[in-house]
Image 1: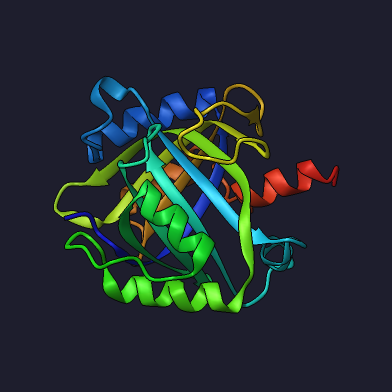
Image 2: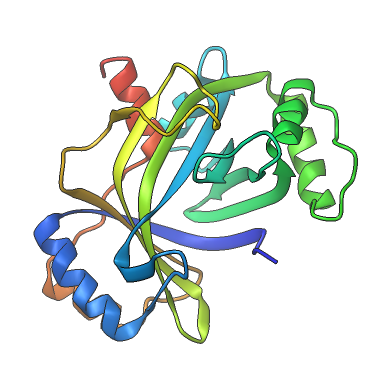
Length: 236
């Protein structure tokens, strides 16, 4: 069963192609590729981000509060109405990210978010997470705001499922046809050849990783996919 609850730090870095090639060689020495990244080929992750009519959630997030939260619907590739997807509530408090998600069919997820009514219980659903999302839907009047997709290569450390490192490229978004089943096209958010590297762990980084970041002079970036898309959409 897929992990449905995460508590961790998420550190982000914007790197160019030259740095990416150097990092990948080091990663291959210390970590294992995700099973979906055969021969270093990326897989596509697609998301719908939800917000209020006045964009309250993303505006609050961009103000860098101590606590923030958001709701998104995620699929791997382009789903159809019966495909299993993940409805996720993501919270961040003092730098620690808590992500909780449940599996639903695409139709169930759309209906749940639109109506606020709990779906009929199925064995693949996480009832606790559904209750939390139900409360979120009562707190905020939300609507689908943006479709956002990217191509990912991910690594995990053998024997240490806590550490995960991912590389996202071709990050693209659209504010029309905001549905997961309507294909994965959109406007690119970053220049060609730029990767977003994310290090996700609840513990200290291993020494080899710390040394790599230092030797390659890779510095953390403050980057939010949805935040970047929103600022570009309003011309900020």
